Length: 446
Image 1 (cartoon, rainbow, N blue to C red):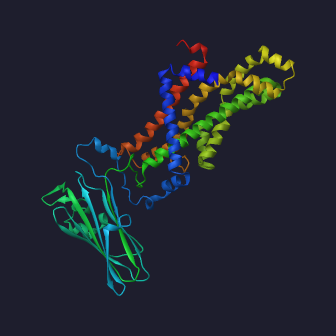
Image 2 (image 1 turned 90 degrees about the vertical axis):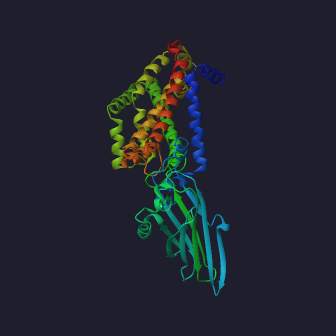
Image 3 (image 1 turned 45 degrees about the vertical axis):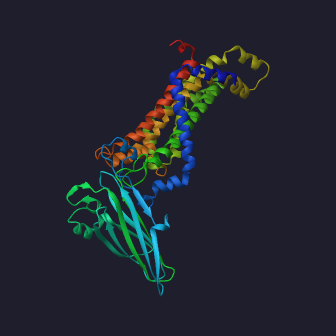
């Protein structure tokens, strides 16, 4: 504990170490927040659920906070549901099982841009006779525009933006523009209070009908959305624990195992040292990335399988030679001879006397290895070989590339995950370099 407090005291003298440690702590907090607020099963369902999960989310919407930088305020998504606010629906019993359900979905629209889409989602409960719903649109200047007359099933989706009859009624203008445009200046939005009046008629006792209006904005959420309407925030949040877990487990697993193998090779010598060195020579000439690509193509793209292969190949990497040279010096130390003289076993000498001697050298190298493995996982995902289940930063970059995000102007889709990758790598690198100066006496004066 005394040595640990001394390390922290020295770290405070390096501004880069303080900054790096702050970044890592924030990353850990973000990872914990993601795990608590979005459990694993929910994250997988959200990311693989398709359009049915994100019905009320716009497609390819930019982050909502960009409105602070726009001179003209762009619209954000507006959702109104009669199930959430019963006061939006008025029911009148006409007798004989027939009743009306008049729904008034009213909202204020004070944006300078037009929405990207309009949709109404209807739900009904009935035995055999479907309810009927008639809808009309009322603008702030008092114009009433008939929208549709529908026979409603249990789940009914009416995409106002795709109604060709409504397009003809609006003189060829797309509904998301024509319903909001000033008749005297079609390029200008009429600001004020809009109403969607849905008059429902049910024909059976106990039958009900409800409606949800979604005005899809050009901006949505903290990080925007992608081509499948998915909120990119989910992948950014869940990419944090995946990246940290992959980097930390790979770095710890390969570093510790490599150190133990190097210590065993030096202590036992003979055929043990010969076998470990021959395996090391073979593994060192094997290219890591092509092997991982081959595993992903022909066996499994599971992140845990890839992680196992990374650790297995990392164990016998070049680091084993560095540790071996250090242990050769440690083996000749006087206290090792003393331990052997009083009868200490091989296991005790290796784990109690040899390994602790070079642990200070391990720590800086281990910290600087983490971002390398984080970028390796992201590289595989960008190449289309990432885990097909988990949402990660690399998967975001792969989706952005596949769908031409930069070409279509969706810069946020690329910059957000790329920035997190850079920040994570920078944090571990700054902390690792500072630790190297602390634990390596030859660098303390630099």
